[in-house]
Picture 1 (tube, chains in turn blue, brown):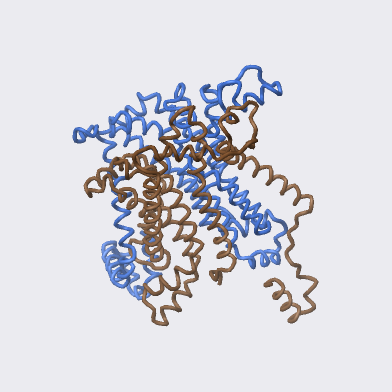
Picture 2 (tube, rainbow over the protein chains, first blue to last red):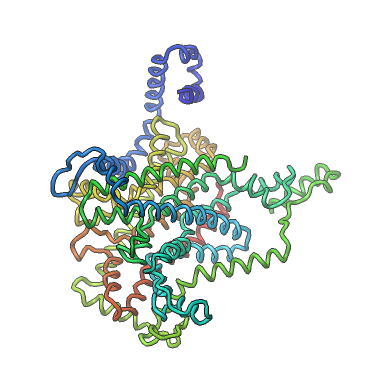
Length: 330
Length: 302
């Protein structure tokens, strides 16, 4: 409330005369706010025109489906019959009865907590390292680092490297130098499946966030560094912390959101490398569990409940990262 | 250039301060530079190896594909795998060019529409304050994280109601509303000096003129970024679940059917990998130089 109050004050200096009513009467304030908002909306009519095409499509294909899938989460819905409301039953059986889902949560969290921060830091580190290189070196480096993440399903090439028999390249290499004497079933032995998937995900992790960092670093005003030098910044680390990072906050935030999306939404890599379902469900993730119930068993209500849980986890993670990033450079 | 000018100015005004003001020097030693280069080259080699391997296996004749120990580069490179692929593709009753047309059509319309619609929305969100704007943007940011699989079911219901099932629009229209482009565009547009827009307004320009003649030319780097992401998303879109007719299916879908053909199609499968990955990478390589160029000569900075 206080925030809204100050905001109106800033936006509309004419409202200062009514400042006393702010603190006295809540209703008055509300009315006033609505009036101001309405007047502002009228003033900015063309803004809504600009926003309209996008807003309509967005509501249709993003907001409505999200609300609908939250709703379906509370129902039993198998596509053929109309959804039947069953309250929290889906969630109860998910968390208490579905062991495989718990494995999925565990795997997703492991993948997200390892590849997420690591991929994020690597993206920034490489963007920073190549930033001051000569221009052509930088362009080549950007292409090389970024290519794996746009190469479609090129990661299936890893299944050739990690083939389970003695002719798999990794196995052959390790046997030749004498570390192992029998081939390891990399993609079917639950002990190795998860680490290998994480390796492949890391290989692909220099994605959208990386590009955004490269562009952001280019956009940092060089005059800031000169100013910082005069103000007593002594080394590159201080430059990074006090100048570069704070002036890149929007890009950092974008990178964080991208990282959350990819690291919580892992399914394609695990499904295509280790099979679906995988041995012992060793690389079952939340999303592949959702695909299992949504596309194979047609238990849409259940699948939507899983989606809602995933969504909740992502939002919480996003909030945590936001508050972390707010402290950067202070 | 700028640094020199600044120094010259300082010298002119207060010559006695000169020894006190030091130019910022990258305090990195030559040894550090060399180490950095070696490190970057090593990482780059690791990153690029699987891609190079994919390309070289597409160029290997069949006997070399199964050779052991393997070679990274083909000894007798051939394009047989690609020509085999085209033979396989032309045997299906929908021609290769039709698949290609479908994908190109979806990618082109989806990208242009997205760029246009998202930029318009991003412009007002970044540069105007109006009730609901910030809330809308926050919702869009959150929606960016919601997984595509989760919204597929309600999405299908809507598209079915609109009668778009089994048309290209089922893929194109939702892609136009992709929140990622909006987010990106808005972030870039916020860096644009508001003074520029206000000056134009004082000169009597309407919102549309400001948008089309001042804002859009100044955010070209963001255009390129938007285009890359959109092309990448649409090119790899298999349109599963929305398009049933064979003659409307996308190239990637058809190619992956070939890939699933087992061990006899190993060579063709490798060729498919290359065909699928080459287009987004090529577009990126071509537009990347443009990004850097526009970044270097852009008038965004005040």
